[in-house]
Image 1 (tube, rainbow, N blue to C red):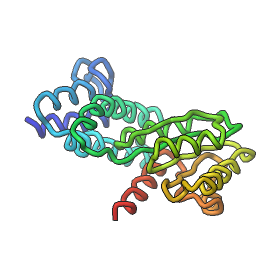
Image 2: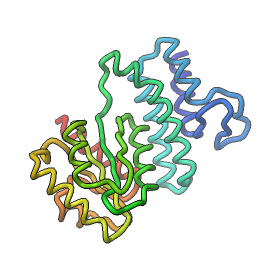
Image 3: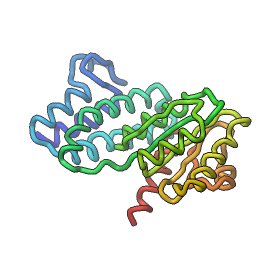
Image 4: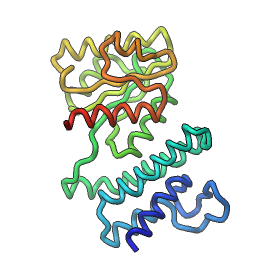
Length: 230
C-alpha cells in the first residue's frame, strides 16, 4: 500500500497535477487524487516524510527533468510539476521542522539592483523548492547591501543571483565583493544565472557556479551541496 501511494505521488508529479480537479498530461485523470491529496494521505498512513520527498516528489521531478531535456516537456509542463511539488513541500514543512529532519538547505535568491526581470528567477525558485530546498526570494531590483544583509541574517548555504541585462550583470560581482568585505563570502555558495551570463563570466566574478537554465541551476546547487557534505 505504501509503495502504491509513493508511486502515485511520483506519477502525479510527472503529470503536473496539484489537486484532484487538475487535468494531467494524459486524459481521464480529473477526479483522481492529485499530489497534495496523496501527500496528505501518505502522512496520515504513517509514511516517512523522507520517503515521500526522495521517492515520490524528487523522483517525479527527476523524470520531469529528463523529459524537459529530451524535448518531450515544455516550460508550462515543467512548471506545473514543480508547482505541485512546491505545494507538497509546504504541507511537509511543519512536520520536517518538528521532527528535526533536515531539508537539503536554504537558498536566498534575488534579481540584482536595477534589473526588474524575474521570470527566470521564479522558475528556479519553484524548481529548488520542488527539489527539497527552503527558498527565500527577495524579489527583483534588490540593492546589493540588502542582499548582503539577508545573507548575514538568514545564514543560507546558497545565494542565487539573477540578471537579464548586460548593464546589470556586473552587480553580481558587486554582491560577491561586498560579501567578502563583510566577512561573509566563505559562509555561502554563490550561483549566478540569466540570459547574458556565462560560465566564463561566473568564474571572472568569483561565483561558485553558473546555471544556464532552471534545471541546470538545481543541478549546480545539488553538486555544491554534495561537495559541502564530503
